[in-house]
Image 1 (cartoon, rainbow, N blue to C red):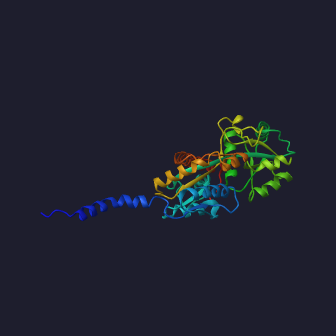
Image 2: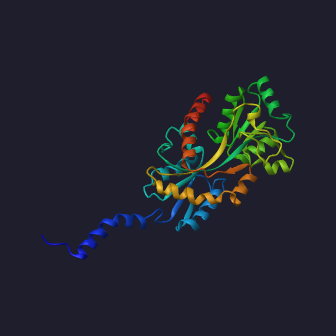
Length: 320
């Protein structure tokens, strides 16, 4: 029986080692990474997306680019990632990823099929009145709403939006009845609040801060479990409605089958941003930079998808 040559033995060894070498050379990412923001340019989601994209560009060895792809209330951008097969496209979105399946008959994606990467941040929401409103504080709002059901109106940024569902959740949990008035965005709602056409305006907690400084608005309560430092003296809804908590959260998700090593790499490389300028900017706007990793995000989606379906059903909100 002929003995194998030294060259043949080395060649066989190299062949056996090749898969490992190829894997090491092909460690994620192997090309530029896309963050799809499913909302219009200049919105509150794009700011942290660009901060994080710039940070990751320096750490991943590949460019991380941000693309805004608005449409269908945010569903279009999520669909793009859900249907992607390149494993280098992710969606940088809000908790609307769990809301859209409740308010749209066919959002074009399955929230449970997406790969959770990380909760990026969360922001308290705010219940606001104009400065001259007769409603003194949040307990006074509850008392008035219970005394005259349906008389007090609240403005939201549109039917099926986060602010609309906040109002409906508050109605259920506080046992009150409020009249919903949808607007095309917060700016339109602000004008109606100041003119007295609506009594309340529900917003992200960062919105009222400059208007409070200008003496135009008051915030009755924030919706996080605890008060926020950006709005000193403003109580949490939970102080009057025990257990109430609803926050606007931002998250990063990949398509189905997104590599676990990519999730781990992104989580690890984003971690140093805690305590940096993005964290400070978010705290000044009533938010918190979390960068929790995939488990917290998976839990939020698993919890909130059925929650919002129940709220939409209870409020008789028509599906689009």
